[in-house]
Amino acid sequence: MAKLVSKTYGDALFELALEENKLDLLFEESKVIKEVFQSNSELIKLLNHPKIDKDEKIKVIEDIFSDRASKDFVGFLTVIVRKERQNDILNILDYFISVVKEYKKIGVAYVTTAIELSDESKKNVLDKLLATTHYETFEMNYTVNKDIIGGMIIRIGDRVVDTSISHKIDKLSRELYKIQLV
Image (cartoon, rainbow, N blue to C red; front, side):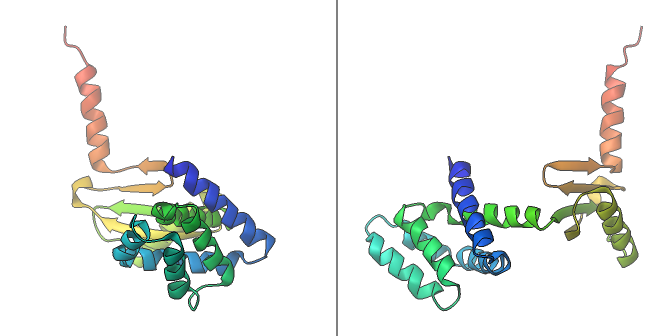
């Protein structure tokens, strides 16, 4: 259900952004607003409190965001509160951000290696991803995990390319278990 809510509201915000020619503005605002909600868990609790009147919740939204966001975005947030979907705000913002990134052909890649990559290696990975995908730019996220022994794991969305040594060892181990000695 939460996915349907985030898709419905996220798509509505995306359509508004395209219609009003405010895609970049609403995209940047959504990242800032998401950060505000993530760093202030009390705000979500306040918006979800059953004893606080809906109008008071809308006033809180307007007081907090009217100086920080456009009227369109503040209005969008008040609609979410009015429809009692405030618990889904972070999911809605995540969905909207992902749709905009896809529209702008911005990929998000998570690269895991056994050792820290040099700047030249990072550039090579980025160049290879740009050449083999439809994305025009990437947000790169690098992590080090010594447990993979060597190689790398690249995740873009739900696609994973695992060339790690540990993966190859696991695969070889599974193949060896299949062998039956006569």
